[in-house]
Length: 208
Image (cartoon, rainbow, N blue to C red; front, top):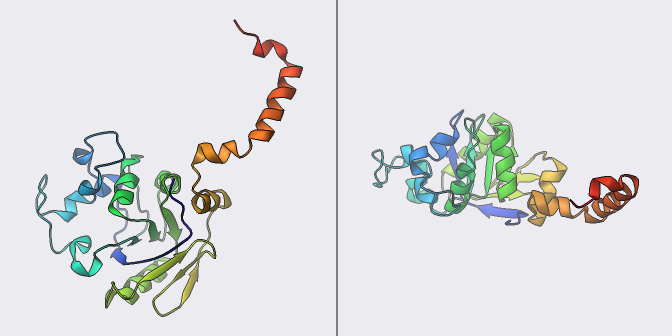
């Protein structure tokens, strides 16, 4: 999994509440179970001028030249609600999004972000709106910094907004660990338990 520590990047505002996973990637765009080839379907219902087409809608924020190379998404309440489809996170990651700043996230979506190397940052709605305004004049030069090491988002003018994140999620992102990697860090304790359990209940380990 990709590590995440400090990211300075272009931030794009999508300050809509309750953006669900079908809006992030419509089911019609999920043509395989692979993690690749999904970026073209990201926000397809908003990004293109017609359903099933590929002509960019110039009004959609991610199609505007000012927001080219966006790596940070500024979003609204309950981002990633709806179904549990992990494709939504895969599409965001393949497009280049590495951090999402929003007042709240759907729990499963939040977990899927962490497990795929995207940092979900919770900040008050007013703070997210202020960040969007702070970058709007010139997104390419007025970039945001998302610092997981210090747990702050730094606006172009240097104002810092602190955020909380679960210690396990922080560790996974900083070190690029998926859930299995995280478990295997306890291999010594796991092996010790198996050996003591084998001694206490040998019949459990009999081969048939």
